[in-house]
Amino acid sequence: MLNIEPIHAYSDNFIWAITKTSEQSLFVVDPGQAEPVIAYIKQHALQLKGILITHHHWDHTNGVEKLKQIYPDAIVYGPKNSPFKGTDVKLIQGDNLNILGHMFNITETPGHTLDHICYYTDDILFCGDTLFSAGCGRLFEGTPTQMFQSLQKISTLPATCKIYCTHEYTLDNLTFAKTVEPNNVNLTQYLKEVIHKRNNDINTIPTSLCVEFKINPFLRSLNPDNQFVIPNEFKNTNNKPESSFTSLRQYKDNF
Image: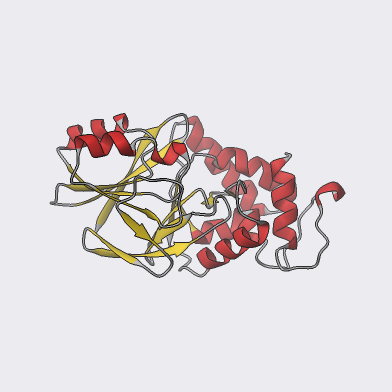
């Protein structure tokens, strides 16, 4: 069984530390800073074996160079079509990767960036900035159609799958979610839980896919039967499957 713990970086980033009981090997996901990873390695007497990159943004990759200098045997895995040049093993849709005896699959999820990939099993999803709790990544490079299709891929995972995104954005995202779905009772209850957690400095991540289907407007927009309160200026009326998603994303960008 894998142990997954957060290493905190910057103001709200999670660098995920993957270990296995009785082993001293470590994989980390999206190390935007090297220093907290180095401290974690020393504290737990670990050996850095691998670095998983989901996309090229600096807050997910800035720590890689220093980590490779100190731990040259660590292998850096990341998307093939990426501006980030520090990758040793380049991954594409359909590839898989053995992490401490557990096979992870690779799926391409463009939208936030064009090079974005996710690492997943039936139980675990490292999704970078594609999906957040109650939110999704801003479209810096991709199109609404691409992100909509990326979320569709994620939605096919088992409902119990744990979602390990890389930012603590949940409380802010819920404020928007409540605005577009004011009558969603699941949102009301979840907001109370999240406020309690944050007031006590407790992480809201990981979340799970079953929770997100109830409270995440962007995932919920995959179902055309779900309706949202969106100002006319942000409404997309092209009648495409991603129309609601596009409207929500435009509204959130200006919220």
